[in-house]
Image 1 (tube, rainbow, N blue to C red):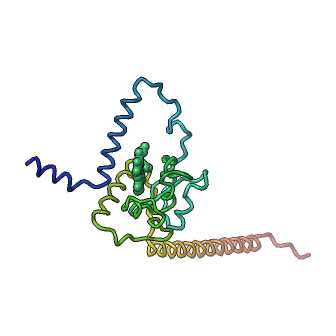
Image 2 (cartoon, helix red, strand yellow):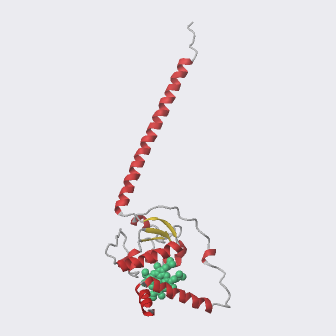
Length: 208
Ligand code: HEM
């Protein structure tokens, strides 16, 4: 009976779960060992808070802009099609950070493989269709971690969605140009009609 329960638990344990358990253990030890010491005054929260990044969607190319190389820009990464603003974790993802390779990239494959190897980080769209169900479970666990810790900004677009967005943008631009043209024609016609009306109603010079 106890063995069955333990075996069920073991089967449902992903590397992520094991990792989080180890982390809890590590932080408990740190908590107890730091008792009685002077608390650190400067915390990450006390650093100036940057305004929240406005929601938007990204292509892989656009995401690259947010790789932490420009300190004025937020740092973002994607997990399973979701883009997160991870600026708060800049010690991890900023330049020289242990997980800096994920910044400005889709981290899905790296997280699935527990790898920060450059071969697991692509600059172009990666549908990760070769990942196994167990790897997807890891990814989902990581996704939950990012959802609870960071701000969700928007979607990482598939090439099809990106093409659709470009077409939408183009047709929106076209419609706006047409609308502006019609507006200016109406204005022009109005002005001409007013001029004509003024001319017609102007008292005529009497012939002498
Ligand atoms: C010897 C191996 C490793 C150790 C000792 C380690 C240690 C840690 C620690 C202590 C944290 C938590 C820090 C905190 O929340 O304050 C962390 C978070 C994390 N680790 Fe590792 N790690 C290891 C390997 C890896 C590998 C191979 C990956 C690759 C996917 C990875 C990805 C991450 C990520 C994405 C986070 C979350 C950072 C965040 O919350 O934004 N770790 N790691």
